[in-house]
Image (cartoon, rainbow, N blue to C red):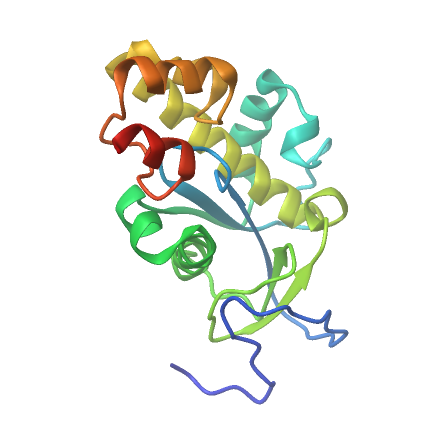
Length: 210
């Protein structure tokens, strides 16, 4: 791990305070999708935007329609200086817990960037272990364009994964509920049990495995 003249903020699973340091260089935004669902990986994305190629309409992925997210997904990948999408698997979620798996996916996304940022802005209040300056920003997906872009990439990637899983296991309705614990999903769990992509340590899944 490279040393830095800046203090490194890296504890996992602890509350983080907002930093006010300003540094020159590339800034990456990071966000995740899939912490709450009962199945599938948690997906994270990191994006370094190009100031010379602005993207209109960036916002928290949750407030955008699916069709708008899909269009922005392609535009972000075409116009960003670089971007990276990574995940932590169901097995890693069950082994580490969802928070640690989320931070792991975020770290993988940052490490997968073709260009190395000098600063990383992460949505939320906790940070993964990184070898660059990092800042946690609560509701950053609604206020920081690069984090908004990362939230869109992560959301679309995971939704596409759910659509593929729906073809494999149509009885659960993954294309509709995206793995969340809806009444439809819970009823399917009771009727059919868990599939290999369900998170065994999440209570509704644990209960049907007893």
